[in-house]
Length: 112
Image 1: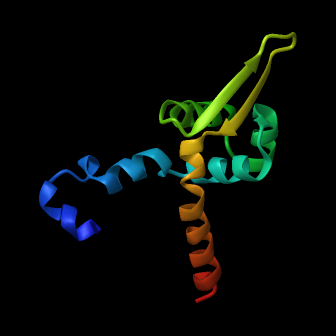
Image 2 (image 1 turned 45 degrees about the vertical axis):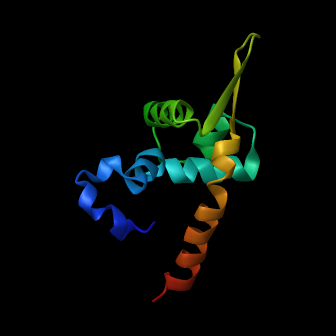
């Protein structure tokens, strides 16, 4: 089915496209997924350092949303000081080819 096939449904949020955007949309989620794909597992502070401009609160919120959507796995180690690592789930790994296509589009169209 194409996006045009869903035009009659009404609310875009109820379509597969709407679901996809709800999972990966926004300023930070695709970047978080990309960084985890390149470096997993990653600790919170390392992820924050690699992203740079994101606040601790926003990163925490985005990771919680990605975890709730089944994209990110959070593993907590019972030690002092606490250690938490983030990695991608199998569901997230099925998104990686789509993100690679977006990167390829950016390479081809960045300077046009």
